[in-house]
Every structure is written in C-alpha cells, then in structure tokens.
Image (cartoon, rainbow, N blue to C red; front, top):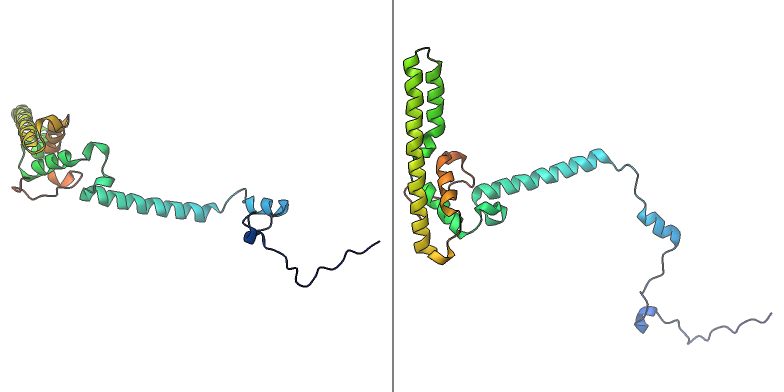
Length: 190
C-alpha cells in the first residue's frame, strides 16, 4: 500500500466561510438532531401552568387598567375613535336622569315590601313615569351629541350609531362606566 504524501507545511486548510460557500458549521448528526427535538411527554405542568396563569393575569390587569384609562389600544372596537371619545366626554360632563334608574328601582323594591297596596301601586307608577323621563333625556342627549359631532367632525364624517352609543352611556351610573370618565362634570369637550 502506498502512502499518500504528507501535506506541505504551507498548505493550510481553507475555512468554508472564507470561500463564501457552505453554512460555516458541521452538519449535526441524526442523534444530535433527535436530541434537540426531544421534549418530555408530560411537561412540568405545575410550574408551566402557574407561570402561564401569572403572565395571563398580568396581561389582563394591564388591559383592564388601560381600558379604564381610555387608552385606545385596549378599548373594544365599539369604543374606539375620536368621535366615540367625544361622545363619552360629552355624556360624562353632564348630569343625566338615567344615572338614577338603579337607585330608584331599589327604592321601588323596598316600597313593594311594605304591605300597603297604596305604596306598592304608586311606586310602580312613579317608576314608569321616571323611566319615561329617562327615555326623553336619552333622546335629547342623542340629538345634542349628533349636532355637536356634526359641528366638530363634519356631517359627512359622522359615525353611524353615535347617538345611541351616547344615550346608552347616560343610563350607566358614572362610577360604573367603562372606559372611566376622563372629564369632570361641566367640562364639556370643545
């Protein structure tokens, strides 16, 4: 058997990266590739689930705070946009009868517990009269919002459903509204 001649001392091996071809590293063996892909059949569920729950809770809390503050990226689609913000601020700046619906209903429930039919009957009549006034306030607020939005944004750019959006916000008690009120009472938007 003939031996191959030994390489000359000045013949140094050339790196593949110097030539510009190849990937610059050795191809991993099949065993190495399989070892890299291996995962346990049952992952460490307690730690993973606890970590995932904690991350999800942190994300939800951040989104809740952002939504309450009125940050645009955390708001649902129905609350987004400058016109919706204008309507919210307009409603939040005023006093509305709709805010008193829930307390008034509680008073009616208490009045029905009194075993005198006179109180029971007239409390329901008063409730229905109050609800008619609330509906009237909702209609007036809706008209005022649309008129103010037309002046500010232009009639052709007025969003559909803006009056209804504002009217439904008047029925909620101020401290329960989401997004939270960003203006004080009497501080109407310009």
